[in-house]
Length: 517
Image (tube, rainbow, N blue to C red; front, side, top):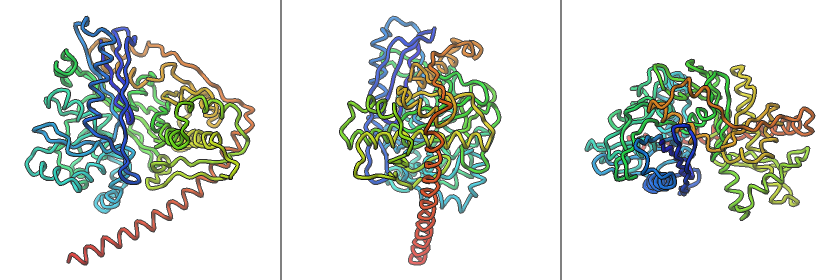
């Protein structure tokens, strides 16, 4: 029996799989986000941890876990979200600061004065951006007095949510993070596979505060205490959620490409054991997983708001219960013009544009616009942002996927997938089971436990539905033209604003130094 838990941004999913990779039980718990200031996103780490315990307990109960002699546990985590806690008590001293959160953006410019952004990219595959963990960790150390006090006493622990959850599940006996998650921190050398001293110094993070990096799966990552779920589960996999989805899609060959439509939309293309860097900085390079001597790498582009944008719209229009049906309806017949047009930068604009302080924008909005028009515009904006990332893969690397593998909530909408296929000019191949992340986590847990081998997994079949683009699509060329013009205007304006703000911030820093002296 394998318990696979996918701890995501707004919810925790637990699923139990047997030795034939058949799912025998599922459970879910919601996690509420908080927005204490514009651009700030966080959650309560205790609530987050309890959601893992509760979802796991219910899934095990449904599966009749008491009859299983051996049980293994795999954890997929939300990536760049961080927590700080007291090593002695296990009590969190910070909120769980979400990957979506833009606090600490000023530290990026500060670090850039110490380490050139090109050097950071060369070592980490990432860019200096508040999206990544190191920026949030620096904010914690700078702004939470209790964290500084614990650091002085040698009791501070910081890390991504996987490290926090496993610490709690094991009673502090395992303080680890896997290579795929470590590679998203801005502190990890993706070739040397270790925390980088120069980056630690630049961000003011001590190595002693951080978890030990380990392989993505293996037989000895830790053991969940019996008191948590009634039996001691061996932890055999820890993985970042997006690579887990890629693994669940059976993406084992270079060039394979997928998009997970969750809170954000995450496009990833596998590059094998070659950490190909995007010298233009438009895409990221990360570790997909490390299950043997050498890691597997991927190219990554994130659209920061997908389901999150639709959730916002459902909330303000009070249509949450009917949103999915409405989405299928409004995209069933698509007008030739993008009117209105939405640039869904609700938490900044991600790859390949990287405008972290941008805000969402509607264009061509008139008094005749309806709630359906807004819904169509937001969904189309997400699909067009995904197309930007796929275009960057083609332009920068010549990656020409045969199709886009798809999973996540929006992949349940056939009308949305049809629109995405038409915009890309590629077939979209959607998993029948949208919980591909949990399945990938279970596959890795079984691999770590020795239940199967990579050769066994290569022979697995994944039920899918294929949606081909319409070669005579009447709107795709026009939509792409309108989108690119609007997005270019938007990016130019946002970059100009960011430049002015950076100049003002630098002047303020000089004034503070002068006053202090």
